[in-house]
Length: 428
Image (tube, rainbow, N blue to C red; front, side, top):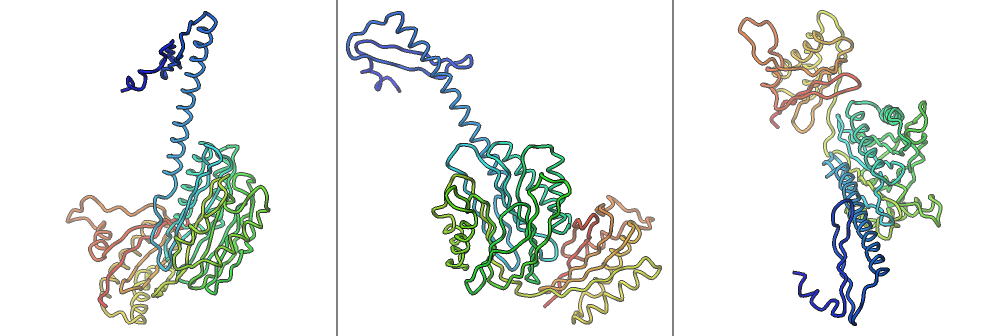
């Protein structure tokens, strides 16, 4: 395939130079002369040495490109592939790698659905631009998600992540902003660890930089304090979290960049959140990675009805739990599936009292013609269905009964223990 292109090369003289590198050939170099040319010993030595240097440079360039592609693929893999659908809200995210260099950074974001219509919004930035920063980013994102799903409050989640990073004994640190949003109440708690504060766009178009008190970056101080700041959300409010790559520049203070972000939010149409994110990134400097996370809070169309009962460890505990359930369902106007609900409550409460220690709590939730029954206890062990039950067995049928009566059931980690839940569909 190369022959036609090389046919006219070097009618007066031709040097064919292999390009050696690492014990193999990286390629070949052809140098041709139009006029007759004689190759002396010095020129031969120069061409041979140049070919060796060119081969080494070519191999290093290939290796550098392969390493950068590997790290970039690693970073893309560690970021969320898609954001979850949220009850009463919409979230979009954008990530732009830096173009000033070939190394990737450690910016990340995450949206974590939590029980009881809560959602955690997370954004962070690991120091540096390297494969180590990208790897540490993935570790911190996984750790924060795990601590959040365990049911810890926001300040405890960030504190645990801080101690974890210190235990890794790495030279890198990370900044982070963590916001826990209660979709039912329209409230949120914000925790900052050396990161930019959230920016709010209110329904009337006004913007606000949340005055959230912050703690130090993660991985810097072992006994750091991470205070929580309350945030009130009205229907139509847009909450923006960004990394410093979006607002920081060498020729302007970071506060100027945050004000610019707030002005961009004020002039945007919150009904098209994806277009808002694209507009905020238009014209952004690319000296550093950029991560942007936006959420528009709409509020739940139907607010759930909730009631809770602390089950005391007394001989009549299950009877009291059944009576509380019957009284609650009667107050909510639920007249069907009451027998199934009472049986499920009996089984779940009995299992918690028999197999765990400490406090037991019964939670009832009614929303959209679905009754959710949940029993929380202090044991992290998930109940397991016995593989088989003989006719003479005196126990082990509880989970089978719960599974047969409910449309869905499962367990959730809650503050060091667990919550066993099930849902019963009700006819409208």
